[in-house]
Image (cartoon, rainbow, N blue to C red; front, side, top):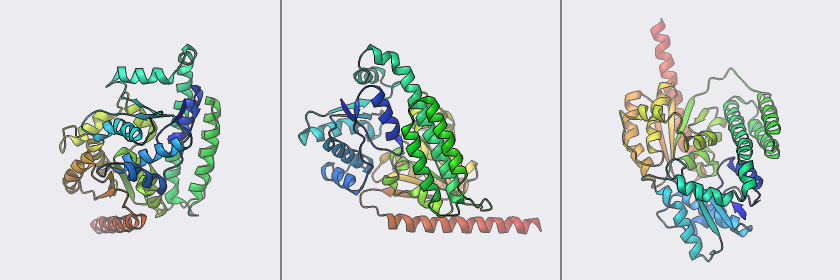
Length: 366
């Protein structure tokens, strides 16, 4: 099989090693671009959200590079994402790609039979089954390393003295981690990456505003989909913390770590499952308010029902917990200039709030 997969953040480095070690030829899709989105928009239903369109465009680009098998993830619950795979399959069939297989990995605890059926297609032969634990260990080591290195880069960027230096070093670190395949090599590449990032010249006297990024997983995770919001904020001197990373999401599909905490935080405002990450958006906003963050930015695909439900509740959360919330709905019409303008206005608001709060504290101390 010539396998491809969705492009999301740094995940292609992980999937590339996984499928290569399973003995497949890997067709790494190109990073999402305007061409990708235009291609997906051309063939997608008008009502489809931006993740659907980017994925469709990615599949078409990968098929043009020779892919004959697409591996993606499914879902359960009221979110339309659970239907993406089937709808993508039908669109590709209508376009004449009848020889392309689309394999959907369903959540293993929700649909174990479906998950195992697709897994058995990918893990061909008894030898691969024997090697699978070792392969998964190496892949998990790489996935976790990528998350830790990316988190370090995001933590350093607001303090960097030379704008863009952190991003430059981070890209070089990704190449080194990508080249590593054995566990020892991956861990060594991670240690070197963290050391290199720590050497980026920083002004540690800064006291940056703290902003959290929450919302639908794809537009939070994929920089192209959100116009690089996280890096844009950090280069403005803001500490921007993303609510989810790939290892956490992968583990969450199996054992759901911390879900009880998020659900518990959300319960006074929303206690029903609304699909997608709608419930998480409420619970995470509450938790970030508890942690003393200055503000929260909700990233959501235009017409995403779970995030629309969350948006209708967030004003109450914002009011009762005294934390400003900005919602950015994203589609193919969204432009970077408009995003930047709204972010700058939001950051000005947060800075004014902090200045006022610090003035009140200083006055009370007299």
